[in-house]
Each structure stands twice: as structure tokens, then as C-alpha cells.
Length: 372
Image (tube, rainbow, N blue to C red; front, side, top):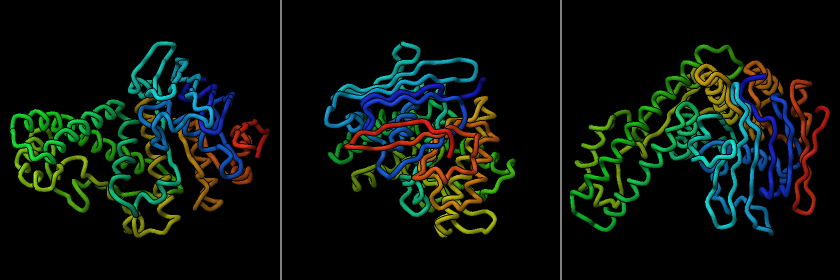
């Protein structure tokens, strides 16, 4: 069997799991248990098989199981197209996260070359009604799924901008210092803009090509909240940073650039902005985008991504839950889904593996079940 999926997942001292081993066969994975049992911790472990800080954006020391605080480790056997990889990621107490692929040390960005992981978590349910930062992060995760190097571009941009902002706050006037940092920001910023634009194009095309029970979201990239126009490309960004120094000095921060961008969305069939749609419609739009991301990646990468869908049944009625499961199975994606009870996954039948997570005295235990 080829494709992209985990054959085995092992957690050691990872949050509430002292030790957990899941033997997997490529089918969707339905994980049920009471709130607080440790279901989301399993999804977080899988999310760390991709570049970045995972679906909770946690620093390494926050993940280690208490009270031991010995550090933590995630090990996986990853089927990536026609190759099988052993992937390890871990952090010892007080140290940053490390990665090994096939027993060789590797940078985090290398994870993006062998796997694609996309997630939808409950905090994203407020994506369309809260600030632009969450939407940028959502879009950047999808951009990273198409172009793993996007992660490095974002890191390079943010590092240079922090240095520039420090100069601005200190009232530094030396234009040579600014010029060097602005050149770095312009180069990385142009790459970020191009990757985001490509991602929106791929998502739009993937939605248009699909027949689905989920609504189509019309997407639009903004240079800032509500702003259609702004500097675009390396030369324009460099010019904007130079021209804006006086205003930036007064503000003590950089006022223009990709860090101010926003993603606007609307419910296409109704012509309603996503922020004005009902709670159920907003959730359905998010699911539509995740599915579009998966379909586009299946064409580009050669296999659909691993999907992490935490409490995915929330705000979806039984009909849309069944439609979601049908689409996941049609894609052939290994989707890790959580819910409080097995009845939420009845429509999956024998098309999935089922695991129950139980918690006792702060310790999580995982057991495979025969069905919902």
C-alpha cells in the first residue's frame, strides 16, 4: 500500500501519555473519550511530525509529562509514497526540539519534504470573527503544506523584522543598519507573498473542481485588514520600508508588509462574508478549505495529507458529518478525528480504526476498539 500515512505512532512522556503505541493501517482513525482524557494530545503528537510548533503552538518544555518533566519523545513509522521512514522528534528538559529521519539528525523543514500534515482544531472555529493574526497563521500552514520552504521564509522575515523593530524603538537613525535588515525582509516577504497567493489559487481551483456537500468559500488576500492595495514584490517592499521609516520610528514598529496581511472569505452561494455567517456555516467553510487543501495536495504531492480534525463533529449535523467521512474516505486520507463518544463516528462503519482514550489519576491509556 502506498500513499501518505502513519503505520505506527509511539508517544513517550508526552503530556498525559506516559507511553502510548498505536498500530495503524492507513484508514481514518476515530479517537473517542471523555473531555480531558488525552485525545487531542495524540493529534498534537502527529502535528509535530511537521515543521513548526504543532497545533497548540507549544514550546518544548510545555509538552513534557508532569510531574516527571524528563522531556518527551514521539516516534513514527511514516509511509511516504513508496518509501517507509522512521521519524523521531523529541526534547529533553530545558532543550529545544530535535528531529531524526531514518536515524539521521535533520532540520524541522525536512519533515515537510516527506510528509504533509493539515489540521482543524476548535480554536479555529472563531477564525472569521477574530483578528487577522489567526487567519495569517491558518493560511501560512496551508502554504507550508504546498511549499515546505515557506516556514523558513516566515522565520527569516520575522527575525529581521524583530531586529528592525528594536532599532525603531531605540530611535536608531543609521540608515545602513536599516538597509541591511530591510533587504532581508523584502526578500523573505516577497517569497511569503508569492506562496500565499499560490495557496489561495490552489484552494480556489480545488474547490471549483469538486462536487461536495460543503459550501465554497471565496477567498481574497488583503495587504492589511480591509486593504486591497499595498507593496508587493521584493522591490516594492524594500521601497515601502525605506519610505516608511519616519512613520515607523514614530510608531516604534513596522507598519507595512506581509505581517499585516489578512485573508477575507465569503460564503459564495449566499454572498455573505464569513464573519457574518452562522456558526455552523463558518465551520462548514473551514471544513471546505481543509478538504480543498487535501485535494490539491493529492495532485501536487502524489497523496493526500494526513488530516488532524479535533472535535470535528462540533457544529456539524449528522448529514454533514456523514458527508465529511465520505469525502475523507474518497480521498484516501488518513484522518485522525476526535470526539467524545463513538456514536459520532457511526457513519464511518468499518472504514476506520477506532481507539478509546481513558484517563485515570492524570494518566491516559489508549485502547483499540472493534468499531463505533
